Amino acid sequence: MEDFQVNDPVYSKIMGFVIDGKVPESWRQPFYFKPNSNSLVQNKSGPCGLFAALQAHIIKKQTECPGYTNQQLLWESMLEIMRKVRGTYLFCTYIDQQSHRIAWKATADLRTAQTFLGQSRWTDDPQATLLFVVSIVILVGPVWLRYFSIPDHVIDEAGYTNLTFVLLLITGEVLDSYIDNNGSVGGMASKGTTVQPEFGLLSNAECVQYQKIGHFLTHPHQNIWVAYYGAHFTVMIAGPSGFFEFDSLSKYPWVPFTPKHPFTELLNNAYRGN
Image 1 (spheres, helix red, strand yellow):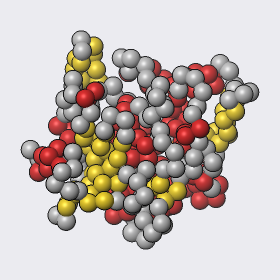
Image 2 (cartoon, one colour):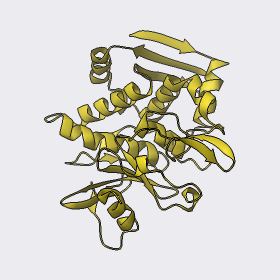
Image 3 (spheres, one colour):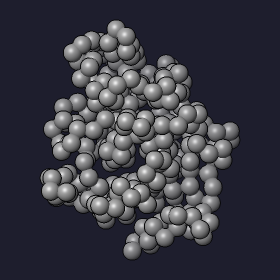
């Protein structure tokens, strides 16, 4: 693997994509699972969008990789996201906000990346969530600036995951809209998804109503959706046995839908292809 280290002005440019200001402590936590389940557990509020995007990949990987441990499913999910984003693998290993330094390792070889994750305990690091976010931001690089109509930060002003970053994690594309294809939203040129992604997006948030979620994101290849409540993200899956929700902040690994669940109608329509 190749080693890299940068300081200012590159440090400030990278962290400027992550957040405007100081990183909240809630974004410094390791990746763990709830007991006897493949459901990620989040011990501080804020990065729920990041956890939801990873959880969607983990659910898919469990079918594709029988016999894998939860940790291996997490690693493979992270590698798949990196592969979608840039076709290479990058791991931020050091962030110092006082000295303004960032270090990372990178490789184009999948087995080398798998070995690094297996030997380094990178996902157990006390600030693993932040390390992963910075890794993705570095991978995206100038593409982030080139496409966004309005530059966004991964962590918004309230300390939550920005929806545009969640879209990047579930589609592998830098998007500034959830419409189909490219178009105009609020009088501004916007880039939407042009293909049917593996994972979808559903939302009942008022802030999403001004631009309708397109057909591609509503009807993904997998029956797996990231659900956006406006200030919280979860994962919803659908199948012959019913609908289930994975919430990283809940004490339960997953919960079945009830008829009064606010997403029942949305998920019904998405699952049936309406």
